[in-house]
Length: 227
Ligand SMILES: CSCCC(=O)C(=O)COP(=O)(O)O
Ligand SMILES: [Mg+2]
Image (tube, rainbow, N blue to C red; front, top):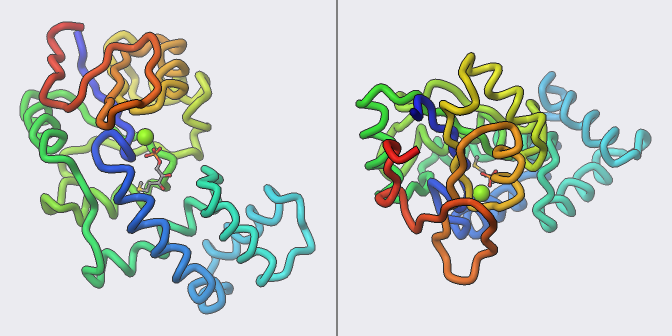
């Protein structure tokens, strides 16, 4: 019996296009100015230090740190300090109304229905917890944050590693068999399945790689009773 659903964002609740054509270019445009202006802020200092450490360039000056981060944006690297900084940069864009977080209508309908039925909903995304809350807090459908019990990002571990899902299940204080993980990425689903979670792949575009996981084209096809 499914009692909790943990969902990915990009390619699952919202479109890959929104992330790659709206969010990432906005971060690329504003990151350098943001870092120059906020380089003394405690949280920014922490993420700059984490960037230097991850890049193994302890001597990197701010210009070099910006170059490293822009390179990571270009290669879509799910690096925790980049993701934290992107979240801080996007905050202004959401607040200014430059964009709203894309959520598929079918995802909204199902999440709202499951929430009303008492299913506990969580997010696990490579985007930082701040970025996740911004996206759902300023979504196309309004503020959806009341639907969620909690948020997990890569500070709990990478999305393609089984240990991350074990930690999430532990944090949820549930049996893995009560939890369904939704994602568009097979390696993430493989890792979740190895931790004992139920899995379901969202295949929203033709030609996507699939694996051993049941596949649906939208949340409309998901029946929690069948697990
Ligand atoms: C949380 S919004 C930004 C999404 C993002 O930065 C990203 O890398 C998407 O990762 P996901 O794990 O949701 O596929
Ligand atoms: Mg995804």
